[in-house]
Length: 524
Image (tube, rainbow, N blue to C red; front, side):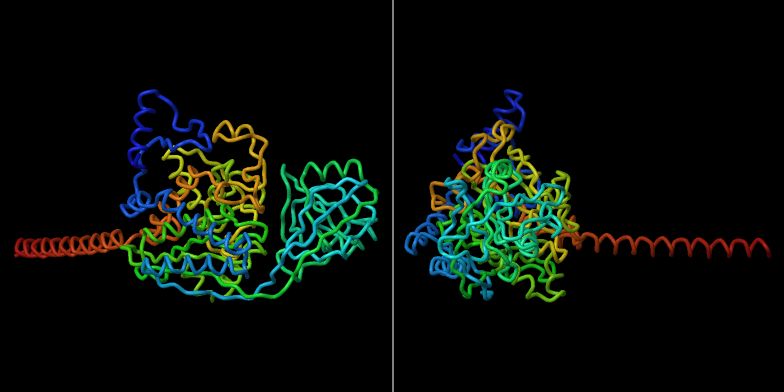
């Protein structure tokens, strides 16, 4: 069934039954939208229809095959990533875009060992990116539980009595890098950070220079159990990783049409982790973005140029996007009207999340730069109108919007969840399974073509197309720059008003002159 037919059928069913728009959406069910596409620019309507799940899925097949030929992954600095980038480039050149490479150096890492043993029992742990390595066989030391308060581990004074011990710290309130640096300053020999929400914890210290200790992450359940029963117990921690300097590049493509000083920018990271092919994380976002670009074409009739980016080394601390934004002058940053980010848009136990630009969900990180709330509203509006209920999700700093926000550029985007667990309320609303991670194969070997919710892939790709095209026509709600037609109409209206004012003034002057003559005649 065609997408437009599906939308009409869904609307007819709802009208006949009186059902609400936001009914339960099984994660694997066929699309059942509640209404036609919302009102908006013709370009947005047309592009959303052209971007299909089948078209996006073809790119995922390509990325899977590239990973299969290259050791099972597409990690930055490997042949798998290079071939992925070349595939994206070839598609964009064929679509008529101006395509460039933005190269940068980075520190490549590959996990060699990650083990935590407590009282002879193994506890699952993930080494944090850029963590220092322990010796082979690990280090054995007493476990020191850091007290939980509003800012656990965020001050050196939190680490009393940890000298020569391995610190156990709850996540939250400050970066992982700060927690392990404070533990190091207090004399700890290792750091374990446990999650403050359900699910495991895979994190990064953001930069190799931040690394002070061997540092790993464990789940909330395991962390709380250790905090309750293992304080002072002898534990063995082995965290080892290869680290070496390499070079990679971002793929940047921009339309040949539209204003170059009011650019709509959209990006997704193309690299996977070393452990797997990364088809959901983030082949899904990359493929949705690529199909949107292809169907838009390199010379569309737009008012604002559209710049697409496929970032590299995101999995190593958002390196590619940081290097790119930092390479721009302030004037070049001003040319970017807004940034849209798509990182995991088809998680198998999917949630429909929109980045919380105005902090209306009140979950902690605060609002984005001015315009972020409007971007959030645009995504909510499209998905809700077409029958998909949404929730806000925090700007946690875990994806490539981070450096844009840090430089005052409004941002937003979509996310379908990673290692966190779906709640019962979310399962009731979206389908899927409560108590299971949105993506149980997150950062694992199992993140392959079988790890995709293709309904979510199709719906979110439509949203990418709709919102990107809408802003390509006008960013007026973001920065006050209206579409060309509106500007032309405003100029015509202003000229008409000016002419009318002149005519009015002439008529007044003539009337005034005639009045003066009449008065003078009376005086005679």
